[in-house]
Figure 1 (cartoon, rainbow, N blue to C red):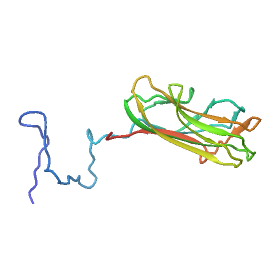
Figure 2 (cartoon, rainbow, N blue to C red; figure 1 turned 180 degrees about the vertical axis):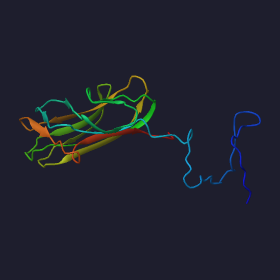
Figure 3 (cartoon, helix red, strand yellow; figure 1 turned 45 degrees about the vertical axis):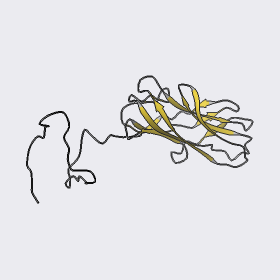
Figure 4 (cartoon, helix red, strand yellow; figure 1 turned 30 degrees about the horizontal axis):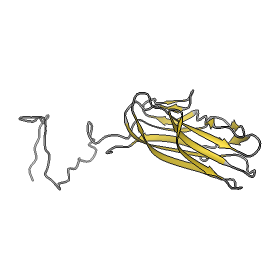
Length: 178
């Protein structure tokens, strides 16, 4: 086995450097890291409610996820409750909601919206205390597109969303390789 020691690799001609051949595995040594290739799943964020939010009956309401668990590129706004990714691409968005009440429900729904328009929704028409989980892969232009999450309930009176971070949360991350 040979060992090549250099500080910089540069192509002799053109702009491509090839390491290995088709089918080879290129491994980094223990403790080494890569930069500048391979892509990253950012921007990304995860949020939870910062307080109990009361949801009126028969009204689509933006969910107030006011506490960030992380926000890699400062793309989530805790004032407007919007995610505005600054990199174009495909994003995986997710949301989970649960109400604090075990009241019989006529209907409840959670939505993922893009620029104020519904892109995904999940509804329940049963009489059980349950959470709703919704996911969607969505394209973003990296400049003006924004995403938010709404909830609607039809119990006949106002109900509180859970403020428990295990029962009510949302987030997104950029997909790489697509």
